[in-house]
Image 1 (cartoon, rainbow, N blue to C red):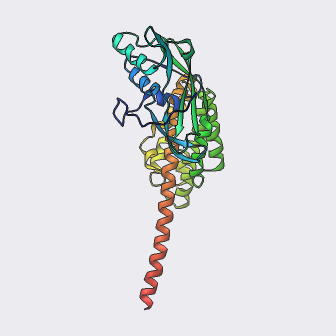
Image 2: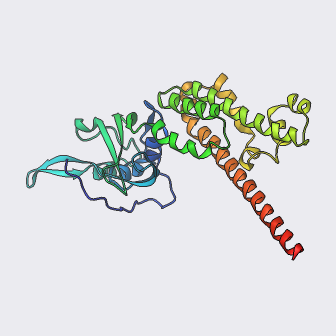
Length: 305
């Protein structure tokens, strides 16, 4: 197919609104479905029409880039024009007008579009692609493939946090992401909980060393109590969201695979947020020590002069 020039389209949505289908492509594992409804058909039309942009890591550039999507067309026919390419976006939007109170979308106009590839191109180099493959069944879409994989897109980000997380954390976070990408939800939660527990333990070691808490008090406390005890040693997001541990534990013991897969992107995002804030705390502490040392040197020189 001939490559088209990338165009910065303007969506009918507000700039800060999230497209549920773009989010579906980026943040779900394989074989996860999404239902097409009256309320989200406009989002689907935007995606099919090439109006979506995503800010994501480019494995080829080895940096975050803006990716533009490509519109999808199909071959239509009429008496005057014969065969011609019609934007599939138009068909999707017309369904909303025809069936405003019913099922907005039951099948694509051509059998060829039962399987669709959503293509995204890097704004720095159009030869760098992200491809997502979906299967449509009735009014549902199922993600059945993508390249690069979820893991390929996620792993490079972990390098930023190596100074605040142990090698075991990185290894188990990769395992969690890999399990999620393979459609295994409960197993992915197990690794996230182990990482979370290790974050709490590591913070406690510093607090015990500095005499802020005792090992005995820490050992007999519940998780939410431990987080309060370590408020000076943990990122603010963790302190303000003690429910995380309850959710992740319930996922392991009570939730279904489907529910765990649905919630995984948020749970992983929370772990990464903690690591990001902890890394910032480390940098601030390092900068503070450097400035204090420099001030001491200046003060010493002034006193001697």
